Image 1 (cartoon, one colour):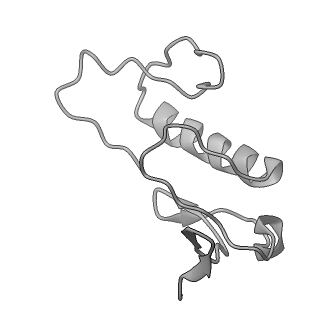
Image 2 (cartoon, rainbow, N blue to C red):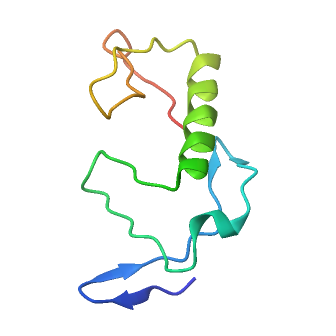
Image 3 (cartoon, helix red, strand yellow):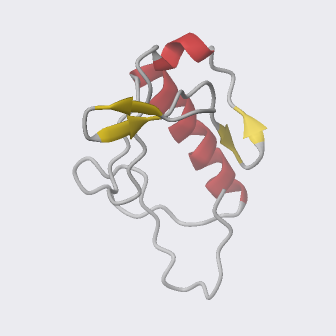
Length: 92
């Protein structure tokens, strides 16, 4: 898919998301038509509520299957894990 120039950043047309190789059951229209900014330099994920809920649920289920322990939430960071006792982890 082509990058869409917009001011000083580029937008990516987002049409779907997958977790652990499984496509989430979301209609492409949930992401809107303006495009999406992908910023690898931030820890905060901003998505439409329906998309974030599906992503968070799928991620939590994936991590629960591997019995990774949740850590206490820290404000907006509500999908945190204590992986300090692991030497290797599998993240979707």
